Amino acid sequence: MIKHVTAETFKQEVLESKVPVLVDFWATWCGPCRMQGQILESLDKKMDETNTSSTAVLAKVNVDEQQELAMQFGVMSIPTLIVFKDGKAVAKEVGVRNEDQLQRMLMN
Picture (cartoon, rainbow, N blue to C red):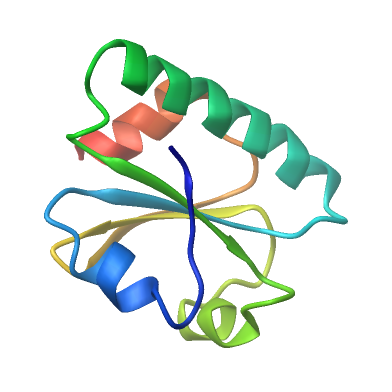
């Protein structure tokens, strides 16, 4: 299940996670963000089917509703994808990425 994260839940859901978290910074009006959302949903479904959902978490942050998080992590364009491990941002990509690219981001 893809988590929808807010400023109030970010620390617990992302920074304190025991597994890597891929966060998609997006907005409802952004066409490429909708494409990225479909790719994330497909990846989430595959992770559930292969029982790998316990090895990583997928999350989304709506930049219009959570502007402070977007500023905190230097999100200037969307979609921006950031992988967090052990409370730190370890990978960042701007623009739509396919499932293989997302999986590689999570594994590095």
